[in-house]
Length: 68
Image 1: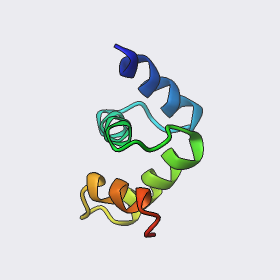
Image 2: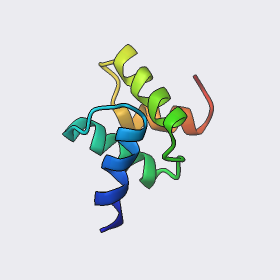
Image 3: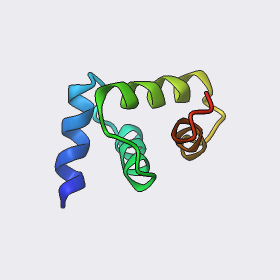
Image 4: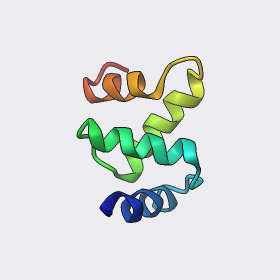
């Protein structure tokens, strides 16, 4: 499966931990058509750390709509 190779590789390239939470974030980003690059990964991760009460799916939708 492509995601199993892309997820960990993208996280490592962005200097993010390869964890269940981060892999789920990458999966949801792919589902929502966001680019899986260092800047986008770091932005979504930063927003999720700043707003831990907010579901990462909602953060991804806001990033996709360029709301933050």
